[in-house]
Length: 323
Image (cartoon, rainbow, N blue to C red; front, side, top):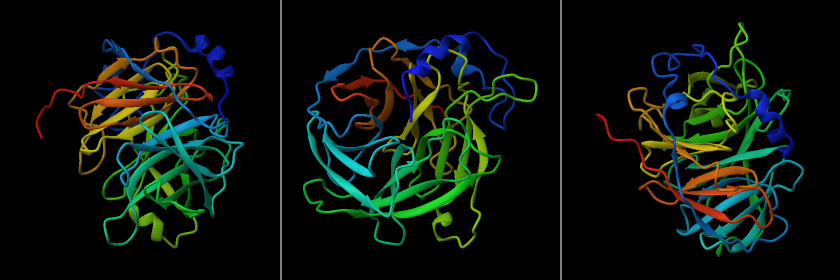
């Protein structure tokens, strides 16, 4: 669970830091997102009419089953519920998820369901771990469905796994069309010399859902040119893959980065500098969620708080370079 206390700790983490090569991507381009000039963006504010049971929204994902609707969820200390909200800010209902526990739900993403048929699922990331002490974490998967057609509880599949190098606090997850899952670390990490490291990316293949291995491990596959702790509010709270599968929005409390990604692997392209949008002046209580409204760069932001508005921003996609 996340609380405003952390904002009082952020000033101690200000300043420039040296980058270390966490993995292959943290070389030539590891610094460009840190040094690039961010663009302050205005926002369209949409008042919300939410019930009191959605008070600590920690993720948002547009529904593939009902356009104009997105799903959200509470973080730790709450029931395992999914909430449907329309883009006008009206809550459409809440549904319990059977077979799931909310230890610390912090992420959600659209992705394919298992098997054939082309059905769309919602992936729920029970990944939060403020103190990095959880032995294992879980992703749940439920079929996306129109909110006006959903009745009763939803039943979830569960996939429990560990990270290859030990526990991490993760609040950002995205799923490729082929079912590959990527997880991005949130908090400051230091190398052996005490220098802050870029955010790490761990990956699980779609085949993990059918694995009989009792110890499933997400592999360290990449790093991002974002260094948590290197600036005020720079801790990663959510991510969202664009509908075209070629762009990834990653948000912190103060910024939104839009990266070009490989549609085959889902990895951020190191040859294309991201767009960096400054959202620190938008007066979010505690900015936790981001999702794409469409493929043009319009993003919806969501904050914790019962009466917090939805924010719609235009954060352009990076200029196209190559294919």
